[in-house]
Image 1 (cartoon, rainbow, N blue to C red):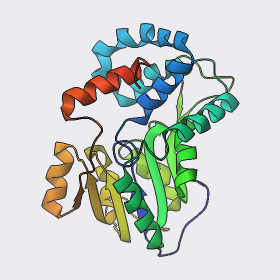
Image 2 (image 1 turned 30 degrees about the horizontal axis):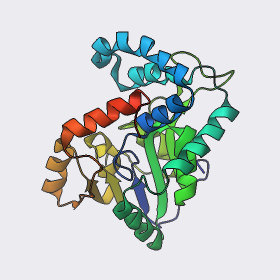
Image 3 (image 1 turned 45 degrees about the vertical axis):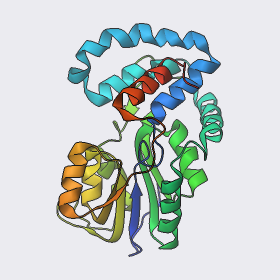
Length: 250
């Protein structure tokens, strides 16, 4: 899905995943899925907790490497099987119904459908396949000889401007990431971290956006979607996320 060269003026539909198509961070959902199956993997917390005070220093990529320790020792085949089982468990009921409708509407336009997520490809790939995307991009966890403690992320964390780096080969030849705009194209996200991806599209939509994204999007007249969340307020959401990280969520 990620290797084809694209040069036709079909336009693009660029979708984020977490909290855009689904109301959760799928990294936490998958962690919950794993810890409920293999409770002893909660020991990853012994490595995670000491790093929390320096989370800002390590940044998103560094903390992701620390967090993924709960996958230690699993090989590529095992992870692929677990990813498929996880996706079968959360789809479609775990997704925003409204956003799945939007996704189908974008398919009808004939645009090239692209899913780009900071979450690992372990489950992003089967999600993209089930939802009918033409291409997917995700954070690739190094699995050669099994997942190591503090696993490498091949190509870096697929977040922010790095999303454009990874999808560069499917954009029109000669496209200038800094100055050009994709005609007949639409981007969808909840987060201001995706502004580089949204900015290259002729139009964009916000899904329950962060304050920073809402500020930019409202000024530009971007469409706003507010699908109903499964939690009410930040406190309930934070508690639910904590339970997922501990493998204690429903």
